[in-house]
Length: 333
Length: 291
Image 1 (cartoon, rainbow over the protein chains, first blue to last red):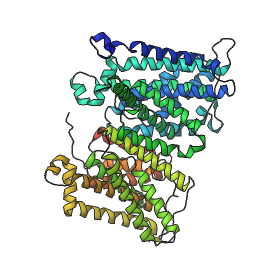
Image 2: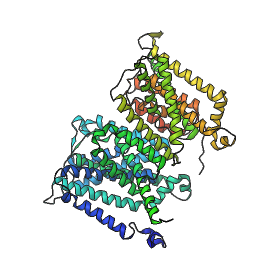
Image 3: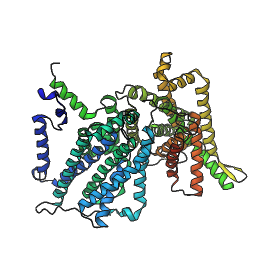
Image 4: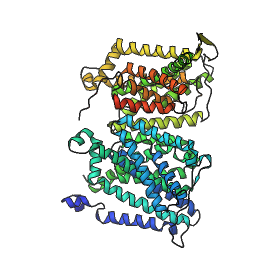
């Protein structure tokens, strides 16, 4: 096929290639837009709840992949950023009475500020040091939330005011569904574009060799902290979605296990690709709900799959899919 | 003054455990630049094996010996069957693999032994105490210090005075050159993994009687051991021991005189301070990276 060969620079600029790509995208978006009406009525709100969670996890995973997969900085504390976003949005809406879009942007900004702060030591900490520091950050956020009761409502939890689109004829679930899925799609699109812009290329250069990147003129201070801030902002917005979906916040929703789950999503889906993050997040959100009888097996499955994935398929499920596609495209070869 | 000395004794006891953990971390880090995130979970796993064997009424020495051997076999096996054949050769990839192992092991432990805390039977107890002019030393803390210092001395002899130790040092310095000289680098790596895991297991068995045993018992000592290794210098074995002891003493004094609640924060504060002031650690040598 002629479209497989890139002949001009412009060919490389298209995000979606060929008729097949466009039709898959169109079907996907159409399906997402009509789900609240086409899915079976029975248990609809539960299905919508899972898809809203999926949208939140996709958002976290895309942000985390920008940090880990693209920039090569491991974070094991992303549940901390999600928690900051969740509580920030909840408090901004209930204490200050802000409308939800302002509260969400505020949650992203506050989370990004924390991301910037965590990113500062990342300038000096590399590899394992940084991993342990982010792990400590995630645990610290959890401990602060459990102990600082005026902020988090303590044991009683923090009730979250529900958002409203002001559109008649839609239930609350359906309104939140459109907001969450729309935001996730928008942020994924931004992620795709970020990854192939000069910023994304700078991230990849830092991942492959930060000294070489610095020599060629990449400002390490700026791009490393930027990567952390962007990633944290994604997590913050996802936190705001989770706050809306749960309606009631408790620190237990943001433990170390969540951080590990986010990490497992991008490893299983594919490090260093936005599509991989989306696939991994969707898969790991659905699985626990359909395997609820095997809940205690989940850490074993996650751990085993992470090891297996890195050992035999470091590019993740998305990388495997690309390879299968290429195999059939060039088939008799 | 007596109070301070008392805290120092307590700090040396915890410090000896941190030092054992730090030694295992540094042993692996200096040979392969991999931080083993499964170090703590391997240690807890070994402790659970010892607990199970003790429940079968086996003598203490046999049970502990068997559990340390299991830890060593698991560490070496992990290197041989997972880490070495792994396609992803980058450092990031290898760290992620050890994370996967940590998750897997903690899952298996929760499944097999449950989440409840369990008492670990130990031949020494903390009731008989020795008194030195007002400073109280319990039997168990003396035993812990003696056992860990013995292990450290044994490791020192192995690394500095034997041919295997020479090979280990050679591989740590330059694996390719060592291989060219006929040193079986992969077997030496496997041995290093086994040794490090067994040291972690020993720390787990020594810690278990002081705290109760549960699948997450070693998470905190692992982080502290890492902080100790950073403090002493990640690629220096004496540094790891020194860092572990220093951190243990500093932490106990801090908890006693300043704040008990924030003693865990101290470890992270120390990591950041050390990396700002002296990134190579107290006894580490300055390390230059090449592109």
